[in-house]
Length: 432
Image 1 (tube, rainbow, N blue to C red):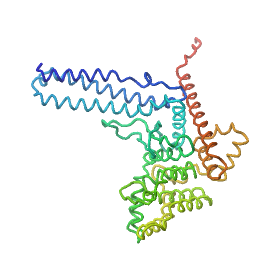
Image 2 (image 1 turned 135 degrees about the vertical axis):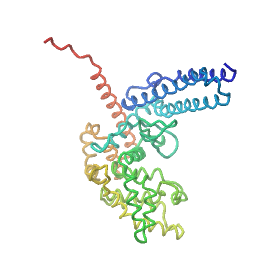
Image 3 (image 1 turned 120 degrees about the vertical axis):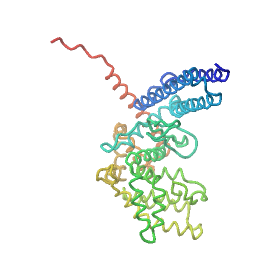
Image 4 (image 1 turned 135 degrees about the horizontal axis):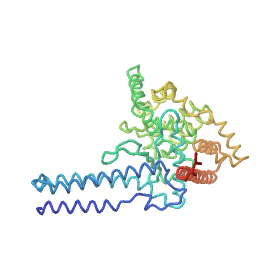
């Protein structure tokens, strides 16, 4: 074998050696059982990565075989190098995929944080659940620096072209631990729900059709441009009530220059109008004077009177079109919902402000009922109590931390029981 071919063969062997050092997460991650990644997600990720490593290993071995065959022997050094470069790119893509999930798995070893993340996994699954309309993929949460959350949706492309087997939700570390964490979490879950229901694809043609109807057409163009993020904000408000909006305010409370910065290339509505829209959606779903008070509070923080005429006019036109847009959104009936509207499929009855307040009183009399409350409903109760001024930040943090630990432990015990049931030896059947 020529020296160039021998060099590439040794490089390929080196790739195989390094690939063999990549072990399943179950062999090198240390975490308390309550911090475990949900079993369906763990199985899906391990199988996905195992299949990826198997494919890369076969590709490397195939390259080494080709080097020894007549076609490889006749290939120039440049041709062989070009082929090896493709193998190496695929190898690096497999490692990148591993690292994407490693960020989510490795934090499970952190004291307290790992258990809280496991509890957030449970809350995310509850927020995504819409029985009868789609099969929800597994979700895994992890923390990162910065103010904004993000999601890498299930079934989207990963480096290398493979489809992501689970949804990975990145949560700002600065939001731990309080009800505000739910606002960031459920907003990102809303992106996954929108994709599963095809909401963007079904709403955009409707909004585009309104852009040529009358003088307000340009406002419908803006709502259409922002629809992806608006749908996620809707999902958050529908699941959390006022906790979604107060949590959003905590994220976008920035210097006025940023709050009023109108960047039409940004898929997010600019912060000032985004909070006002969240209040409008909340008032439509859960009518109550609190939404008007919160909207006015936001305007007092950032009075639009300080703006130039052009921006004040734009704000006025957006707010004038907002009621019609919110009505269209809540009453939209996408094909995936089989005749039901977005408002109708969300569990809004239990999240009316009066009922949330009553549930908190029930918790006070019978604290054990708190642990039986579905996670998103529990977050809604706590957020409503904060908004009503009957819960301190210290009490909120203590309750949220305790609930996250409880959900994590319950999820682990349920998974362990399911595994035991599947793996338990069956007694011998009587002879017949």
